[in-house]
Image (cartoon, rainbow, N blue to C red):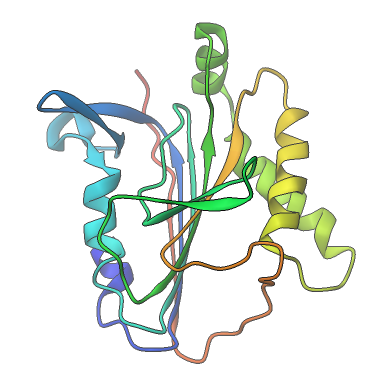
Length: 203
């Protein structure tokens, strides 16, 4: 994660994808969403908040980071703003703001049964990643720029069609924008780095 944002320069474009297990990390009287890295048994969990401090805060202004987080236990996005689809507005988070342009997509759920949790943990592939890729393939056939609102709707349609899945796609950001107006046709003017993290662990 530190490598991803190291020596960041304006115009750089980054992509971070995590597909694996997550957990609730006890911190004092509360819990934090956390990744389970492949060496978590020895090194411990990595909270989303620590990931934000290591990967997002070091980014410079005019750098761009897109995050796709796909965990068996829904792992909340730790970003300054979260999009409330039902209300059609952004909700403020508690994290420090950054001048970089960061957009995150992750699975969220209000309730999850033990059966759904077991299915998610035993799935051969992450439902969020699968729905995201299917949505991108479907939208690409239209041969025009795609807004985040369209991506959320299309991914949600595929997620609802996944047997046993209770996930919805959550959008988070470091800067406010209109999801129905912002379209992705931006090209990198600096360097591009991609970090995939797909740990193979079992409980």
